[in-house]
Image (cartoon, rainbow, N blue to C red; front, side, top):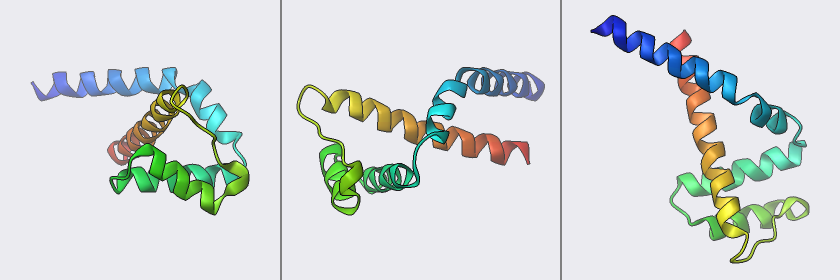
Length: 99
């Protein structure tokens, strides 16, 4: 049974690695301040803050990178940061599992 689970995990990893290059490329193209802004947002979200508060805190620290949002755009912004947080977690787990 363990062998079967390892195959499934390998397939999941392979699928994820093949499906994420475009997102990864976009991440690599961010400026240093954009990365720092995103990191502040993610840290605030991980500490339990709502997205609006996380964006505000990051915007105070990096006003040139601040995202402007309203009720029409906050959903898309939330999806982006949820995906970014998941992406970082998955990459870390893949790295840990491959060592």
